[in-house]
Image (cartoon, rainbow, N blue to C red):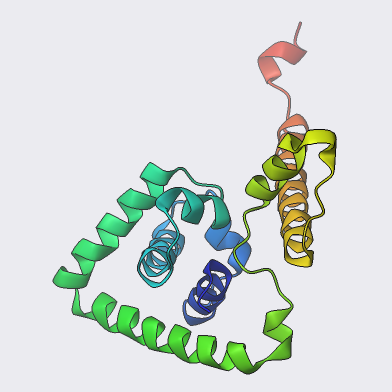
Length: 173
């Protein structure tokens, strides 16, 4: 089974880029091309919508994913190296998917269950009497962990701004 997680890990390995950087807000070329490549692979190799791909792969809007997929689609025709890399990734992901179907370890991991959909289903059920599956619980844990990591990162940036040198014009008062 080809999942967004499998695609992300394959792209991360090929481009030698940590998965959190693929999910980050960074927009430099060394991150954008692999991110767009992952989105394009996900749109072609899975049945997920652009909205779902965006949510699962960094919390992006559907139009952002659509733009990234369009850029890679155009680049596939214009740049031979990108086309070669794309095909190599497709082949690698297919091989990993086949191997993963036989692997007990991969059967236990989070498979493209959207944490927001799970939370919405649980919260909208009458009397909250929904029993989530183990895969849904893993998705919720992943969502909470991802949210907590993003909050820590934002707090770190905020603290760094607070510790910046004060404006000399204000200290003279």
